[in-house]
Structures are given as structure tokens and as C-alpha cells.
Image: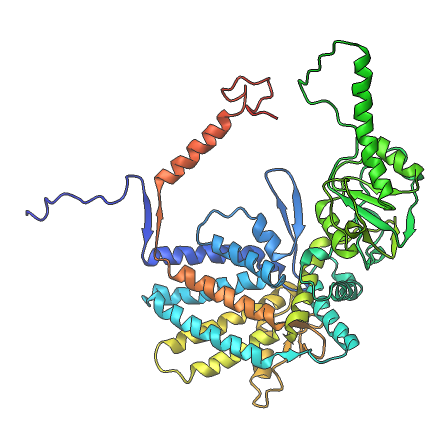
Length: 535
């Protein structure tokens, strides 16, 4: 009786939402599966596109896994981990973002029945990590190196890797055309690993085949004043001056006050302003530069001044373009025109103004990343689900040598890997069961000749992916399996979620105070600007 009357111990604040145990794990797995179902149909060359309409009214149509995951406003804490691994795969490798999300969700889906049957999640995590290590070793064993080939052979192999990536993108119809362009661009920057050294510019109009590679630096024509058309449009071996200053008449500061005792002094002040701008322009001309580029505005006076002296100028050049010009020409961006010496000027063989046409930027980004990684790591594996089926077969075989429950867990990991070829078939409208049975039979051949066989998207059967040049860098697969396994293990290790009401109310207060800052100056005596802050 005394035990029944003991007071209840309260550890957490009233209103705290706690979920724990088996139900919490299953809930997290269901959330991750739901996220994967969104991107599932985008996998492969026959993948569907998603139209995402955000609260700002902008519409994005894409089948790129990372783009879709970024645009989905996911609030479930466990499901957000899938968004993170998609972003990680995109920044590390550039491709395989849909693959990594699908694999992670499938690993969890295969783990779900074991969790419901009362298996401890740590047993699953241990087996999954073992399976992941074995899978990565097998990928390295099956990978084919492109090292030691001639430049032409290497270009051809890299173009095939790029074409595999582009086949699932919007510009897939012109994949050969863009693949060779991407390879040339990546090889052109040599050992410089900075992705921003490759710029993609687009102008509306024309068709995709009007796109071309500029083996140099291209930047968009900026806002121009009268006098721009009188400037020369082509130079040979010019000196290039790069600036980060304005070359235009500066207006007086707001509320500036000048008191004059003699009206004649007013003209001297006006003259001083003109002298400042003319002094800057004279120094630019005297430097010997024939091309002047600035990140800030170059006004109408300066544009006409340079035109009269046969000098090309462009203001408001984007910062990344200016950095690219500096890297390509050997120039240095100047914040002053005083003491401009030859050492800070850049130079190039040809400078000219041209027009170029729009192409699909997101698609090319993936292809550029893939070629960079393939060039750096130089090993490729068979695509089209071939490598996934081969690892699955290898893990099933290995599982038979293990005594105990982990045999079942590694088997479920192996089964999960089949999601890639299955989804490729589903998205292309083929009978996935029939194709997977053929693949299992081919990969089970004792000679090992079936290892490169994957889904043939053209016929709906199976084909040798290596012979059909459906390749992908080994690094993409290694990274995807690593990231997906880690994400699955992380979600399986969470057995309780605590939602703190204080943090929610704090967010509400912050939102309320932000709203309070609108209206009539947010409590400050402003000048009717409406947001309570000085501009």
C-alpha cells in the first residue's frame, strides 16, 4: 500500500514529447522510407522528373537527387539525415545522390522486421558495418584502372563515364556531345582541383548543340553605358587590368553639408570631383592596359573615356568570373589605381566579345564532378546495377560461412543492394522480377564472367555494362555504400527522441519578435522605412 502512494518523479518539463523503444525506431525507419519514395522514381536514364513549387513561387523541375532533397522541406529529425547524406555525396563525388538515399532507406527497410521481432539494433549495426567493409573491398577488387593509358584513350574512357552520368539528365539526348566537352574542360585545368575554375554560362536562345567550350575565361556582358559600342571588341596579347573599385562620379553623402563664404569656391569643389575621376582614368590608361575589368561599376564618363582611347572596359563583373580571369591571365585584382605596375597586369593571347547559348547547368555539374574524380582516382566499375548485383552475390555467399544471427543480417544487407537494378527496371517500365532473376543467374556463374552484367535499358534485358560503356568511377559506389551504411547505422542507434517544449517556444518568440520588427519601424523612431533599421 505504501509503495502505491509514492509520489511520481518528474524529470522533464511538462509538455516534453518523448518517444522511445521499438516504436520509435520503427517510426524513424518509416519516415526515411517515405523520403526515399519521393526520389525513388528519378533513378537512372529513364527516371522521372519532379516539379517542386516553393513558398516563394519559384518552380524547379529536376531529377537530380541532391537538388530534390535540398528543396524538400523535411522536418522529421531522422529523415533529415538522408538529406545530409545526399548533400555529402553531391559535394564529395557529385553523382550518386539518389543511389545513396535509396540504399540507406533499403538497409533500414530490411532491418525493420528484425527490430519488430525484438533483435537488438547493435547486432544489426555490427553486421551492417562488416558487410559494408566487405562490399568496399570487393568493389576495389573489381574496379578497372584507366591509369597508364595514352591521353586519347583516357579522354575516350572519361567521356564514357561522363555520358553514363548525363544519360539520366535533361540533356541526355546530347550526352556524347556534352561528355567530350566536359572531359576537355576538366583536362584543360590540369592539376588545379578547384571546381570554380570551370564556369558555366547560359544565354537564352538557340539549341543545345550551339553550346561550345571556351578554352579560357568567359563572362557575361554586364550593364553598359553609351560609348561601349565604340570600344574595340578584339585584342591580341593585350594587358589586362583587374580592379575592385568604382570608376564613376561619386555623389555627395546623404546629409553632407558644405558651407561656402565665397560663391566662386563652389566651382573649385565641382572641379575637384571631376579631377579625382579623371586622375583615376589617366592612371588606368598610363598603365598600358588595353582591357579594364572591374567588380564594381564603370560609369558613362569612364566608358566614353576608354572608348576614345581604344580600350575595352566592363564593370560589375561577377566576383567568381574576376577570380577566374586573374587565375588564367596571371593578373592581380587591384583595390587602387595608384602605382599600377606591369607585374599586377594580366595578359592573354586573344580577348574578344562573343555570344554563347544556354545549356543545362545542373546536369553538367554532375558530369564535371564525375570526370574530375575519375581523373584523380582512375578506377571505374560497371554501371547499370552490375556492381550492386555482384556485391549482393558475394555477400550472400560470404554469409553462408558465418554461424549465428549475423548470417541473416548480412543476407538482408545483400538483398537491400538489389534495390538499384530493381528500381532501374521499374523506372524504365520493365518487369523487375524477370530481369533480376536473369541477373542473379548470370552473376552466379562459377567462372565469374557474369560480374559485369547489368540492366540493359535499351532492350529490357541484361547486357555486359563494360562492353556497352556504362561505367562509373569506383569512388561513387564506395562513397555511396559508406554514407548509406553510416546513415542507416546512425538511425538504428537512436532509440529515443525528446522534443523540448522550451526550444519550440523560443522559436515562436523569435518569430514573433521578427514580425514585431515590421510595420512602423519596429519600435524605433525611423524615417518611415518600415523595417526599423538604417539603410
